[in-house]
Image (cartoon, rainbow, N blue to C red; front, top):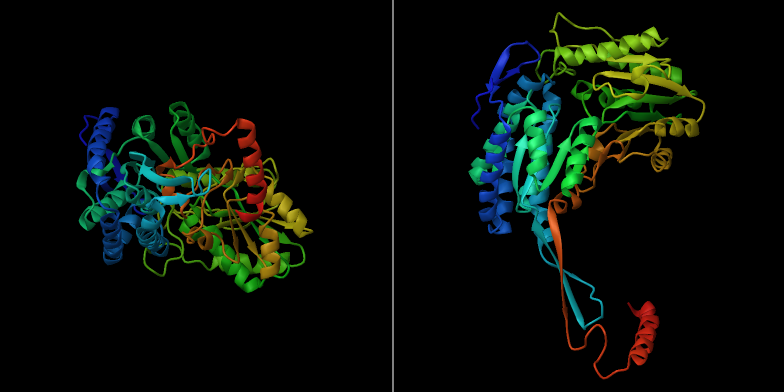
Length: 494
């Protein structure tokens, strides 16, 4: 894409140094991307599904072969630790393999029960939407740009993607590997630029809109989609709770909680930001959790690093402001809460708070950083009530013995609930739907619906021998009596 606007400078958050630059595309650039994508999609839809699946399986292999290169770019753009970057490589590879093997079953015409047995033959098939618009965030720049595109492409669509301006090179590398695997060059367009310009234009042009990001932006995009009467899917914000039951294995629970709160430097929509601990084990769990948090290795960039940097100094400023607000209102700091300038301007120590009052900003609002608060409860019923007391409903976790965990999970108002895990068990289960309740989203990714949402279903019925309205020579009252008898018998037969 070409543009006369000054380019976007991409910065390595660990060092503050310039990593590269990309064009700041215009609305006209975005429109040209859609024109090219539509032209490519017209040919792609005629490509046999077996060939589309083979491309995705080759892409699966290329992602694994080029994982070091992908990890390097992800880390350079996000500052995250290498293990968290590897989670993205795994997710993309698993998603490509899953849908490559599943697509043929999902997209073949399906026989459905007809209006009248034998007399009505009904089939359901699926056609692609056309061009899918994807607007992805910076925190998982490979997963949330490529994994959402894979089922859209397999379904026969083209894709126009706007990656976040802080992390465009990861998405560009992912698309490069797709093309190397055999995807037509023009089919997957990447348009770099601002959300206000490029993101809005994508929402105005797409035949289906997929968004991951804040609830506030999600509402704006949903309004555009609603006005245009196009389908829309979004994973939005969360203030995700964890419940620690008295029958939990406390050593394991402390380790699980650390991963749930501080993986990816806490910059996950599904990250845990609230922990409700039963009073019977509150002191013991807190001691273990704080100690495990203080033992985390911060910085370094290699495989031994537990916590990397945040995405930018501005994101650190936002988290610090929320921590300070809570402390000024009476919260207590158990550990962390400080910048780490010796490592870089984008580093913040993993932070645990307690006694956070309800009027503190971070009590209900998403921090999106390595910050969590703890609260002691007298019963599991109180824990569930507090966990559900939020406008969000994206993810939740329960640390408990299995029976207790399953019992609690069924009462939590969240799209995904993990037992003895923070978030990865549900997100990694790509054969099951993933998404949010309430203000945490609309629609789902993963599972069969994660591919079929990018299609339009078409029902085709053939009526044979006898019309639906009945034989020509049969009186209507006689036909009504015949159908009444058939329905009564059909209750036991069909």
